[in-house]
Length: 455
Image: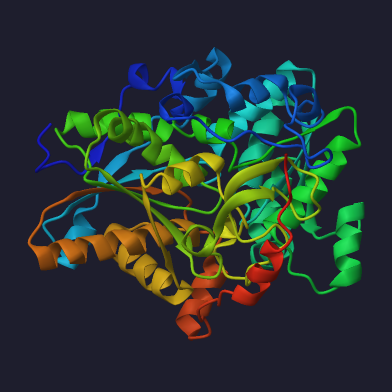
């Protein structure tokens, strides 16, 4: 296959990964341990087992480089994987660039995003353990959509706490989850102690992922037959998403290419980790010049303005304490349209790599992100979700920079999430009502004063 002619690259079924890649095996000195929010001491598997499946707990801490994907999970993957790798020739032409731009398109399954890669695995392991009911949180609704499909497949019940601003902005996401049997509740809600406490203090709260996590964890912890699942952040989630980068590697090899830059939007970290970690392995092992760029919203700039410290994973301080970049566990970002990028913290794995200087980070305002989304849609014929549009903005900036420097880099990014449930956001853009969601630095400073103390 000639790279000068390629438009789309697919892998045969036989090349779909049979193993997930675990970057913990290649991180020097490993990751800092989790601590219990209740005791302040290193958390034990038994404590985690109250809300998580045992196999997922093992995957969270394993140092094995490759973990076998169960046959049942691979069979479900085959319904939508491999996903295509596209050469963005329309965008290249629009930018008049010699940069070669590729995107891994994870929006072709029914949910429209990469989240299904982990949802299937998490539902499978819980079902295997005899669990028939799950709880979770969702921001923009992509994770809730994916888990609703997975739970429906395995005959499991699901309660989804959806961040209230997104619940109201994206009613069709809510309907999608209900089609597959999920019970979707706007968070903060009156159904939990943590939700009622938030509403008592702030009746008009627009919610946050931290609050929604608190509610979902509370229900799971109080129910002996129910477990909690998380759609991003955790190590096992990032590992499940590695199928994206593993496939992209093989697809680029087929056209004799290798990226100079890998870019992904970054909220909790699963999108970026999925596409970047298999390439990051090469950077760590061979000290390559590969650049990895995490892109976040200016309203929730966890990497670019947060601190690297131990913090609670949720607002109610019930989830495990992790060392990560954070804006403070009760920080509530402005209600922008990229609901999936509004988490106060970040994946411990992504945080560790950023702290080691292995990747870069940048933040963009909402308006410039939608400018980039429009340029991409009109050049490539795909309407992108607001989250992945952050990556598109960085891709465009990198290509224009390459033009000015006379360079011809190979740029790879992960396009996850179509924008077909985000027409309200695009309508706001066209009407001129859309502005940039500001970062509330004062609120973050106050929140960071409440970081936990661990032994």
